[in-house]
Length: 88
Image (cartoon, rainbow, N blue to C red; front, side):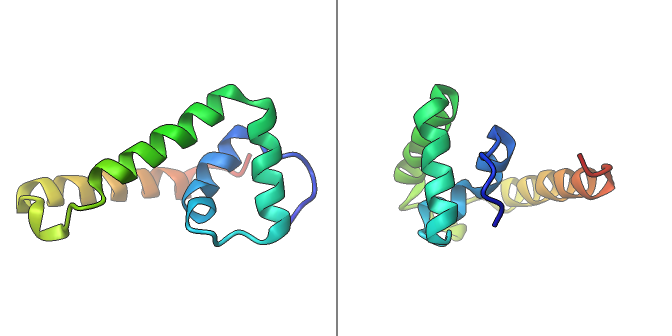
């Protein structure tokens, strides 16, 4: 992993891996260093943790089929848009 400072966009892309403890020690250090200088990302991570806590007992069966289909479509659209973009 690059030792350069993490950007906000990179943090957003890595937040799940961070919260699940999947980042390397270097990646975790970069993530946490960014949090020391970026209050907006601190808020984002806190909101992400809160969302996990609030939905932690939600199972796939609890989500109506129509809502599940709509969510999957949204994620598919987002992924198609990301793949179609030029690298930054």
